[in-house]
Image (spheres, rainbow, N blue to C red):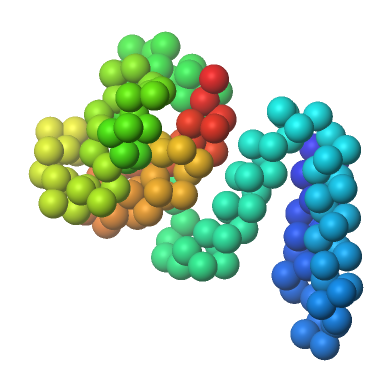
Length: 162
């Protein structure tokens, strides 16, 4: 997607610019990115923009190993197959009540460490972890992967699920 490439270049320019580059120049680059954002159909571009920013922040500050991901479309296809994955929602109960993927388990990220034994019976199955945007579920995936589970993160979380 041409827009994605342009946006990523501007984001990279902004964050990796010359340290002596003036703040005004950096803000100008940022305003270019937001003008691009405003010039595109916001409904389609907004989830991409948020996901790109979250991935950037996760790469900069998340540390640790990368997490395998699955797109919403791939997950929908996988849910139609005979070998369905286990779905784990790591959002808060209020978020889960508003909207969730059917047949998913709910274990909020803050409770996962002491409730991980509840997932023991799924250790031989793939677990797809999701949250609102993919950030909390990425942390949950790292935790579960370290405990020996086969996991993938729903890319973009519920923002990308329709």
